[in-house]
Image (cartoon, rainbow, N blue to C red; front, side):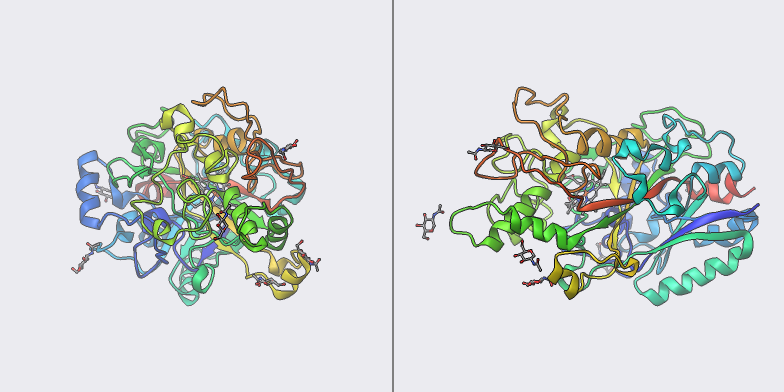
Length: 483
Ligand code: HEM
Ligand SMILES: *[C@@H]1O[C@H](CO)[C@@H](O)[C@H](O)[C@H]1NC(C)=O
Ligand SMILES: *[C@@H]1O[C@H](CO)[C@@H](O)[C@H](O)[C@H]1NC(C)=O
Ligand SMILES: *[C@@H]1O[C@H](CO)[C@@H](O)[C@H](O)[C@H]1NC(C)=O
Ligand SMILES: *[C@@H]1O[C@H](CO)[C@@H](O)[C@H](O)[C@H]1NC(C)=O
Ligand SMILES: *[C@@H]1O[C@H](CO)[C@@H](O)[C@H](O)[C@H]1NC(C)=O
Ligand SMILES: *[C@@H]1O[C@H](CO)[C@@H](O)[C@H](O)[C@H]1NC(C)=O
């Protein structure tokens, strides 16, 4: 049996929500919510029945061979659990290895008909649903086409040397039982851009808190563990394996999202609003902040509409403390902004909905070069490709990523079930991650014309493909999947 694996390598932990404070591994930008300590998490998790040593800390992509023996004896002991990443853990990890499998990979390992109760999305694979995600498959990398990737390794360390050493270890354990089909090297941005994605905005600020694991900060969503983990309370589906081998697993959605940074910056300048007392550059910053819904520091425009505010940005008690309800129009935060499209908070079902994901992506690719900046154009040199290695966890791809991308971000008329359904302003598509290859008209971006929309004829984020994976519980790696 020959398994094809894709490797996603990062030089810093990418599961920011779960490991932002694990200091050996992680960047820990101010403002990202702190984790509970190992002791606190164990206490609250024990109370709710969560087994933190059995939940993988994070994943990257792979493909598998005769592999089961090595999986059991060599790889299973390397897998990093969430417990090992908590602050003050009694079992600290200095490297980070996780593995997850696509549907075709699980089939290879003998899991028959692995739809895992997910409306067929997982089983079909991401490529077969790409059009529904708003992708142009002509932009997809050939490695992601079809269902040929069987799995993914996620390898992280605080240094590139650590990543290389860990990769060598994994390769020597698995030998020819796997072949590597693809590798993506994550790259945290340098200096004061640490924790920021390539457009310059702080990322990883808003993830849901998980009931029994951490306490929500003001404004942060609190979800039942089953929204993220198979078979825990709140899992919307009863599905194969969710009370057995697959319990505590999670679907991992991986996407390689290229970012066209010079084009984005030019767009901001060319469509800058004209707020009095602001320079062109300040107006361009304002437009960018309104497209995301946060300033580059992370401060929400809902709380600081005209100027960035570092005090709010870096205070986890404040930087999620808004819900778009007062006022509910676009005057503070545009209805089309990325964070409002992907987490409508009080706009939708009074904030009570199960459509939450835990995001754990990391930037990849080099910084913008002077030549690209000067020409307002991204280079076509593949070595200068940059963007976001998007990783998101949820127990149900349909309820999670798929709803956020297809039904919310891409749908210009999304306001179904909105508390403010009479609002005549349609949202338009998400100005950041809306569909590729079609013009988008996100509403409310111009503060002097809240009922208008700006037409965007180009893609700032280009999907280069991805796959759906199942991140199994460590117990399944030790038993069901390796025997
Ligand atoms: C290159 C592509 C993307 C970029 C540059 C980007 C950027 C950002 C930024 C800067 C934030 C604000 C920081 C934070 O709240 O953590 C954010 C939040 C968020 N993004 Fe993205 N994102 C991208 C892709 C996606 C995709 C594909 C999805 C899902 C379909 C997504 C879903 C979310 C969600 C759910 C939030 C949090 C909203 C909230 O709870 O307030 N993002 N993103
Ligand atoms: C971790 O332990 C150290 C020393 O025991 C202590 O000073 C620190 O406050 C602890 N950190 C947390 C987050 O509890
Ligand atoms: C612009 O700045 C001037 C001088 O500080 C001030 O008097 C005026 O009210 C400001 N206008 C706006 C629209 O903020
Ligand atoms: C891009 O170039 C402009 C001047 O042409 C400069 O002001 C700006 O700082 C540059 N941006 C980056 C990211 O290098
Ligand atoms: C880049 O775009 C900015 C904003 O439109 C413009 O001022 C500048 O002249 C452009 N540079 C080039 C080389 O086209
Ligand atoms: C607002 O924008 C719309 C287009 O989106 C335009 O038709 C309308 O004239 C604009 N209103 C003002 C006052 O600029
Ligand atoms: C938690 O999971 C680990 C790893 O599979 C296992 O060794 C341990 O017995 C489990 N603990 C409980 C309380 O179920």
